[in-house]
Image 1 (tube, rainbow, N blue to C red):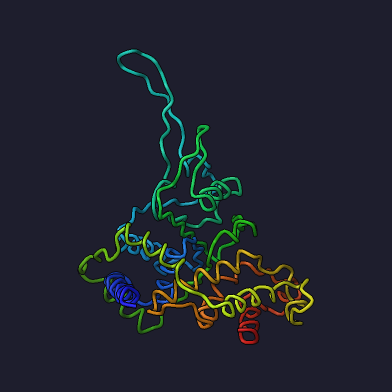
Image 2 (cartoon, helix red, strand yellow):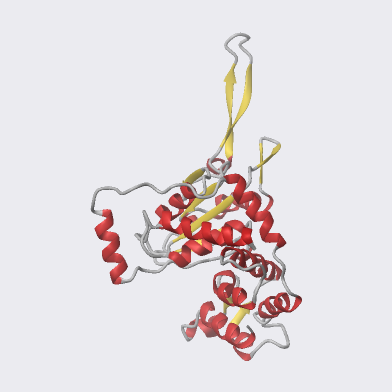
Length: 323
């Protein structure tokens, strides 16, 4: 319990450092940290100008992690992500040989900015690194140094000229938080801070080694059978072919969440419990994370779209009923 309380205190100190640069968005900060400790990846959705990139860069600083950014554009190629081979000539012997130059994917925290701006061929270049934590290039498999955390962003407004991520790749993301506008008071505070001389820079709270230890500790958080059953049952109720699924799912959903969603709910819930100072997974963790974990895994059908019903609306009703 002393270790868990120390982690909860460190979380609060981490937020204090982030507040030196950012105003508001503490729920998003919490979800990003949960995703990292659960060994997942995050797809952050939000309109331009909300500070998504600044948040991610500052988070990397407070966690002592290497940070790289890829700006996804229509002409980006897979080699721009994982690297390429170049020919070098030995000045002594005159012999030429190939040397692999690692791409930006070889880092700890990778910002895939506007991931839906690049064609599927380039989007798919991240699949292996996200799933297996390795890169296959130049005929070799190269492991990525842990922790490897992909944080992708996408703009929900400008959809012209974009390439929506396929469902299989969406499912690779542990969570899909939605970053909303600041309140008016928060925006006043943000504008006042960013139009004045720079304040103190954020300090590192966790080291890389401590993050790896926390990731191992998340797996050790006990979870009662009934809580796991609640998470699995909630996910099962999103599938329209399930005979026990409620009417709203059978009428409004094309495809529900797969088994990876059940794993994501439990793992993310364990990380949340740890960060909030609890030594066990609780139903409240499942309830709190249901929307960010499930919203990108549920596909509403045309009946739902005709009634302006989103996956969030469906998840909210399911959570109220089954969780």
